Length: 208
Image 1 (tube, rainbow, N blue to C red):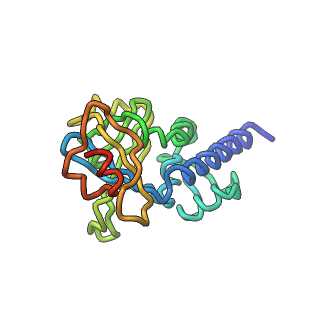
Image 2 (image 1 turned 120 degrees about the vertical axis):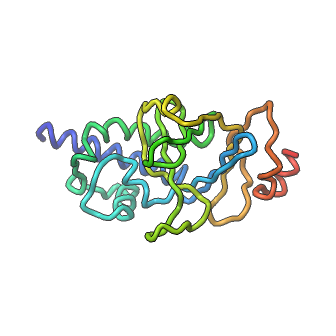
Image 3 (image 1 turned 30 degrees about the vertical axis):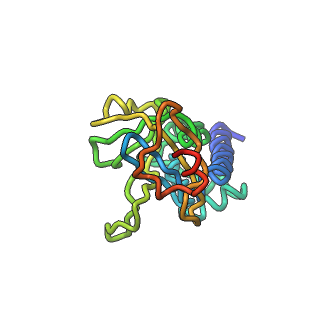
């Protein structure tokens, strides 16, 4: 196996590993981020996975994810171009494996000064840029945000128009109405009343 094939196989294996983490920790879940009196919700659709890997592919985004999570993705279905470089994928994939760290630890929400994405969540090592959930005509589908880009050590806080630490993070299955699990909390703070209706009865009793 020549050097190129070895590199391609390494990337393929990293993508498969990342897809397993994505499947087990993120796909089908919605996360509620709360800071001060503000909040936003983030969902991780399976068809967004490919874009976060940093590679391009000859197959659709959904098929890419399906093949990766079943270990059926081949090196021949992965390629690079000007916007999807080998170097970029090599940097992004380890962070993609660690993506759940942004859903259960202290993180910072940043507001972008560019048009690439609207807001981001960062732990300083990497940032997930988030965009609104819009249809093909640009109409808002719901209030959830979707992952648009993964950036490694991009100085997100320094380049942000505004940055604040998250006080609370909750998660739920996308198929249910209320959040029943809290994954992160600032012990010195109490959740704002504005999110009370988002939470299950048990969480409301516990927190308020």
